Length: 321
Image 1 (tube, rainbow, N blue to C red):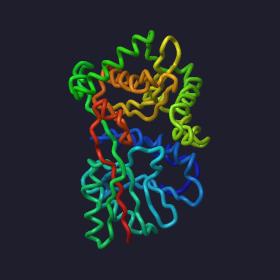
Image 2 (cartoon, helix red, strand yellow):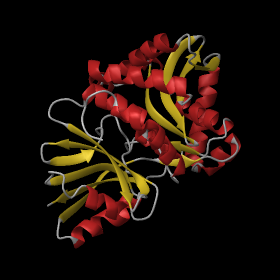
Image 3 (cartoon, rainbow, N blue to C red):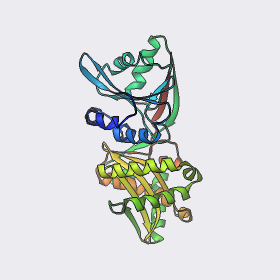
Image 4 (cartoon, helix red, strand yellow):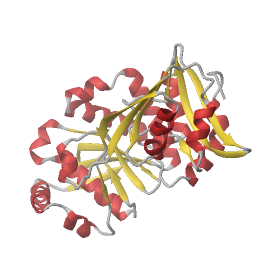
């Protein structure tokens, strides 16, 4: 499927979701909705959409959501708003068939970003292209720390390093001593007003977050939260202290995992570590909901490791022909 007229993502959505359900690993960033919202907001200029079905001898092996920008072909989406990229591959032979499928596309550079270290792409595609005589470069792009979730909060505390466990308990006691605390989740009736509060707290907490939230990204966020709420994925949470909202997180519960996408807090409450405490309560909530993994997503911020995060690498594959 090629072109930017209409909504090509909606047309292919049923098949796309069927394939996602067959994968051993998936992410909300790989859904047609997330990628479609990004495309409608940012897929402008000379970019050409390539939603490629990859098959061999009548058997569907997967999908390749790609964009051709000049002579460079890449995944749909950028690293600012996507923490993961990957093919929607579900069967052996996908990568060989993909190479055949894109051989006639007018690209000189293939630039595949944000690939997790465990993706089959990392094992199969570079060697296959090198065998064809192409130059292949693999770069370390970032890390995505995460932690396996046990069945109970006490078990989770038990797997933390002794110092981190002690500090978490000490800070929680100090926060509880400051007043009544409550974890509040958005509702359908309060979603848009809560999103505005989220934006305020996000901008207040760090200058780079305020600078990041340009108007077009704010509109992207707004559309994402409306879709993900209706789909049942969104967790927009607030930490209230004596009735005042002092910290917030946006997470997504998808395929048994909670993905911590962004956060913010009021600076005057920084001495109470309200941001860290809300992240801890977010993990506790995920455990109570029966999720199996907490993904802190892109970036090596220290708090992620204080809460048990273990690194998984993100990589970039560049193919030149």
